[in-house]
Image (cartoon, rainbow, N blue to C red; front, side, top):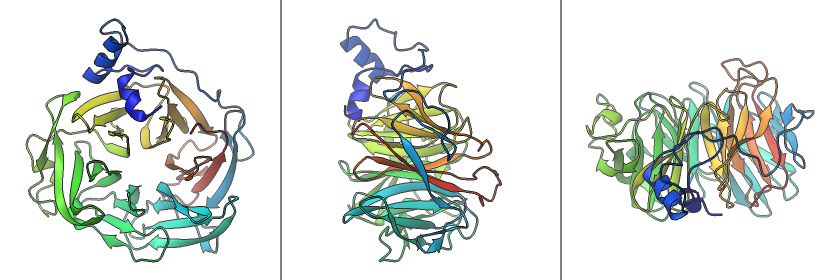
Length: 387
């Protein structure tokens, strides 16, 4: 089921309260009593079954799924030392194999690395694609197969990187200088959505002067007077202003409590906010904002987000009980996997291989949980994912 259908079929059911005109309209269309989508529903049932006992890698998975560790901070993988504090990630097709890209959320060194896999999942090599940047948190894959690596610092930059390691990474300053978190490309409207990790951060879209070239363009901020309903966009007057923060340049801008992950598909951009533990949906076709998830359980500490062609969303937890939760098109929220023994860490960088059979992610600080991320672990989960 397409993600657009998720908006058309009503709110989610998993110990979560949902609101918004899109949910209301869908509910009425399905002959459900008006207002019934505004209730706290029960935890949903996973299409895969609940996570079982932890495996040898400490990962609790549903039946039929297996895990392996592909990289550890400070240890060699594919001929290089894997970076500290692995964070946002994405996968790219590569001939008969694929590439997984991962950011490094550490000060001053930052950057991003890539692992190249063969058709059977064997590791062929690993290499750096970005170095010398600062606190590279999340980012996003572009429609032309580059990686946008975002600095989560004051006046942070977006760097466009080549996952294949052939071209040098370049800063894209027209996309704004602020505390960047994640990015998601909308090829239908030829814009890139951007989240901002501030307690009063904003949600942006960048309209490049030419699609496929991010060196110049127009940065706009979402404006709204409520949490749900119609929105407008206004141009940010000076995206690189050194003294006036980007989020304070437009008085009508809507502010969000700590923007995190961002994922686009089929006319909808989903993004998360950690301060209020919400998952949002921006309906780009109708320019409306909705709340998809607004609860304390089962999904806690919303962070990175990705999805599948089947319409399933996978949301990683920053802390919580170290789970990746699944939000299905059937309006259910349920734990998919859990990492045991990493209580002081967070799950980062969820991304599917191009064929949809493997899910990659990291425990940023690992079992030791040190702030420097020197015990980071990057995993691969294989199984019968819905595609």
